[in-house]
Length: 357
Image 1 (spheres, rainbow, N blue to C red):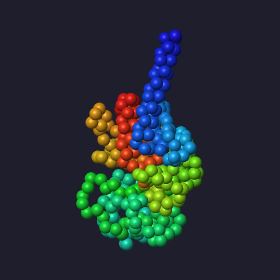
Image 2: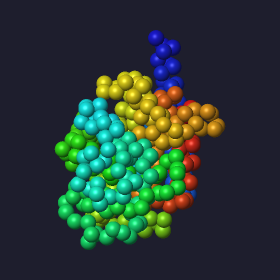
Image 3: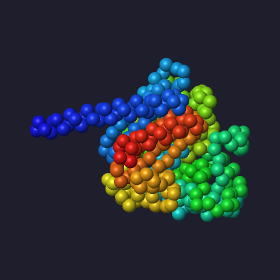
Image 4: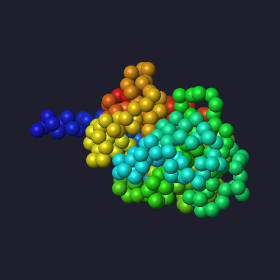
């Protein structure tokens, strides 16, 4: 018994030292790479192995980072949208092979004929050859898109599907509007708004999902920063709403840890809703990008990862899952710049090396 207690004490002291070194390294990278606030975590299917928030919610301010601070996920929102789609397919409310115009026949005649056969799976897996669109695009204008949030998304995709498709054949078409179209399909199939679907998922997982800039509802939440380190003032951006199912969720790091733990549990075959095979297909079933998840084999250790990155203009987010070692690595920052991205990659690599990934 004494030997066991001694071993547990040594393990506890080792983990404290381990974590302190990671904090010191990460904060030095945060400062060097001009990241106002940095949050990172390492989780397994049943444990949070390390979690930290460092720095400040806003540059040149006194508002220190807290572990419950919220970050815009950007494209990592797609990992949530794709999971909701899988749930609705499992419940029989829609099929992966359901075509967009099966649900919105009134838009078909005015849309580009190339889009006629696009399915939910095509949109969720980026196999629909439609063009890119993001926050920087100038058209359509706000005057052209009217109505409440749902109606605006409907009007936006109605406009978008009239445009010319990508003519060059590609294995993947990285298009935000694919996820806008998928979100509309989920709304029609469920009879609920996308926001309601996300909130219901959050309730089932005890996660507080929100939308838009974190500082819009609460100015004492993190402010995003552009590449010049200019803070983004609280505002309601209409383009964020148009792209809700593609990149508009905000969440705390502990909240996203819960979502990652659910993913790890599913990959281990411990999901009550999906089989192990179904979860693996979601992450790795198709080359390069499956159902909300990129995948790659890391050259340095030949381990297989599923991952996603977000860059919504004033935040950066990264999540990497390594199912073979039962760990997920999450890194958030409230700035988007090349310099900050380099810093997040260094922090991510450090955590992966320390935790066997």
